[in-house]
Length: 66
Image (cartoon, rainbow, N blue to C red; front, side, top):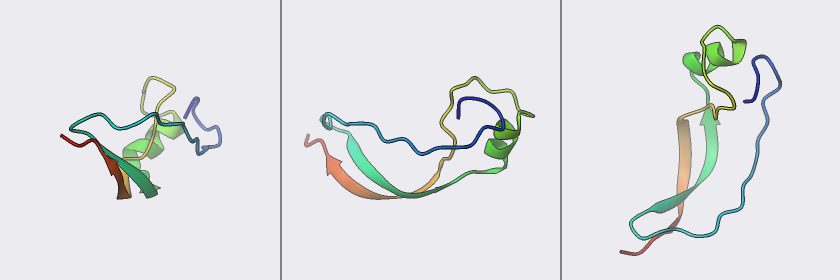
């Protein structure tokens, strides 16, 4: 989200690799909570740009071998 009340968009970013001890997950779906909604409405001050949504369902995609 870049500004309050603007349309939300999905962005994809290229990934280089996974470091040792880390995992990479592929997000299958994501929900926004009430706090995210208030941030989008502009009634909860938050710095922008901000990534909304932390209720996710994901699949393990890759892992950095230890």
